[in-house]
Image (cartoon, rainbow, N blue to C red):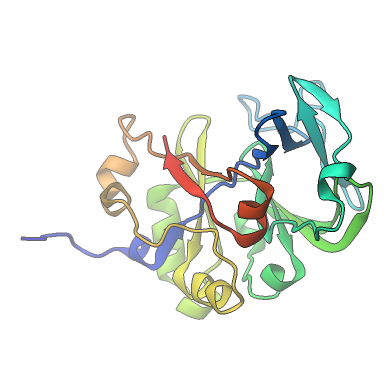
Length: 235
């Protein structure tokens, strides 16, 4: 018998963090990854220029090919194919979200969350740049209990992303189910359809025992990437 008592977290779904590792030609072992800007959170939660690069307005996120640990030209493998860029991606550690115009149009963001946002430029392995992307940085995570108290006072339609601080240096972004529905209607699938039981247990979420925070999507080939066929794992 399910004795779960519903909380505000029931309205939220944790995002999958896409891991963009694609093998394009398994015989030659060619794959795809992206260069990225790292965010580093220091003990006093300040942005420290010695340990990170800030993704700023108009900066380019580049997808690159690799083989045997070295960068390779992917253009021959992509010839005649349309390269599909992700609608949503955690590209910079786990604190900055890059989203397409379609995804951005359905988001409800709040300055109380400490978010900053701007335009992002994505470049595919052929060197072509793709405008129309945005970045959102969650620089002030909230403890779980504070997030719940804050958002219970807001109408459902106004509830934004929750960027939770589950414990020191361990964060998670969760999305309101109404946003997930809008994304689904747009054909964007980047969240968990079944919320693990752990997310319903507020006491457990606030404890040091909780560690279920990372999600990855794995694509076996470029065709799978184009068609959004992936294997999913969490750890």
